[in-house]
Amino acid sequence: MPAVRQPEEPAPAPVIAMKRDPKQAAAARLLGDRLRSLRQERGLGLKEVAQVIRGSVSKMSRLERGESPPKDRDVQDLLRYYGVSGELEREIEGLVQQTRNEEWWQQYADVTPDFLKRLIRLEGSAARIYAYETHVVPGLLQTEAYARVLVAAAMPGASADVIDKRVRLRIGRQCMLKNPRPAVVALLDEHVLRRPVGGPEVMYEQLVYLRNVAGLDHINIRIVEFDRGGHVAPGFPITHLYFDDGGPSELVYVEHLNNATYLTRPKEIDQYRSVLNELSRVAAPREDSIRLLSEAIDRFGERLS
Image (cartoon, rainbow, N blue to C red; front, side, top):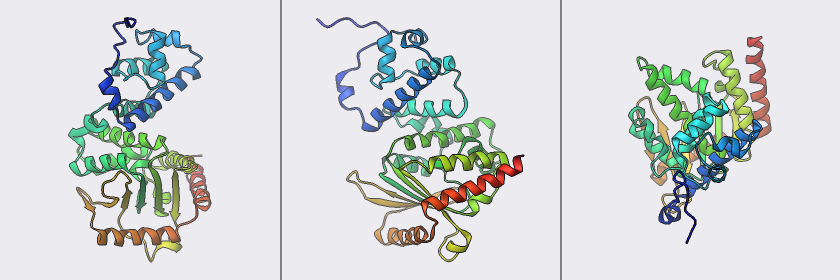
């Protein structure tokens, strides 16, 4: 007979394990890696932290290997024990939600318009995301402080709780960028580097973050300079999603003030693809774009001193 497990460590039903979505498995592994790093950074052993979640060393080990479904209480207790708060805490909470069968963003359904829910679902299944932004950093690449300024400006009169939920939603979307899929190409108008959203401190942090993620293999940030893109740059953002899961291979998303347009007809997609291709042709190469980011960081850094 198999050994009897401890009450706090119920064996997952085989049928559930067999049907586990690959994205859920990836999120569980990433969550485990995060928790392991936090523990090791503090010089703690498995035995010490197992007590925090009222379990055994094997239970903690399985959690860090992404083999056991995480419990909210266990993860929250660990984060509290490790002294984690702020953006990292929200990132980890997002990973916990992604390990479940339900969509991770359902906890924010009350503050999420339907057109945005659809975009989040599509982002999660895309193989590649190609985005052009005219005025602000794309939501997938925003820091928490930068996002909070934009959300508050777009929702005048909203309560602090509603604004906080929308910000958490935006930061939670970024968890997928910890994996090599989807690949992201972000074309940013040079205005984005100069417009002081939230002031010098917020911009400095945001631009440093952009420069850091621009060094990742699957994220390519390129700047459309003033003197290069004026004749081709549209006055609105465009997001082009590519898929390889057997469904429609691509679509274009254009967001407006309170709604969005999804384009799936080949002729329409061709028009937007042509615009994005031309923008890509005139945009600064990757290395030059990183240099432009560094120059913008220096400008805002000087205003902080």
